[in-house]
Picture 1: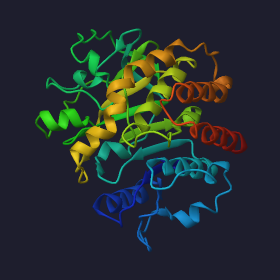
Picture 2: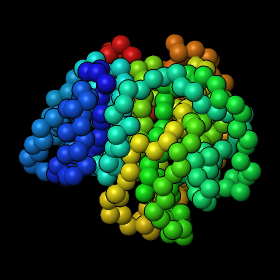
Picture 3: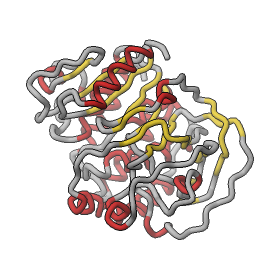
Length: 334
């Protein structure tokens, strides 16, 4: 990799085994490693190879988003994305502080990928293309769990500026799955799948690659459940990818997760808004009349969040944050 690739994590932990592993391998592979802290972060954080941003340091950033971005929320990661852009990022990688990158994680990334392209397949449980086990990703519309899996077409060259890698051992599944099904699960090594227009599958922030053209779509909403922020971001990103002729790539696992401690019933409670609304949110986004072309991404992003706030999927306080994000993108040349 090269010095325009950035790895972004948000964490309240002291340098743990994963953060140490990321820092060591980022240095080895020429990746800039940025960690965004929050109110519960340790008073001192020292890790060679890591650019740590305490809350106080974040408040010095010259971004419009700084002023009203909530603390104690995963959305602090938005400032990490902006820091990367400010420092010349052309590729942003993201994961979390309980995911160990496997060796392929550190290999060069390419937007153009060989994949099985799917279009107009509706809700499509991509996890099932990578394992024969019964499984679905966090954020999947439960109403469609028993839908037949669309047949894969032949391999083709696909433009994918957003790429979701899977996670082995403890993949990103919802609380219903964790409460009722056995884990760990690891995926088989199979050919990549790319979802284009008319195909929906939630993707997360556990192991995701973003190329510069798609940076505007990185925005994580703050005024919704913590368990939904990256999921609902993924719906907006998919809808707007259609306006640019892009597909979302799903590829083999390049991390494995040793999951942080979670209260599964609290996770379940935090996911209820998704269980009851995921399908309708995507239907509403699909129904938007949006102009096509990269030049409309900012306005289209604002239109998506106006919809989400007007229908009370996210809180009304989200719109000023999205407007600040767009203002910062424009200031940074994105």
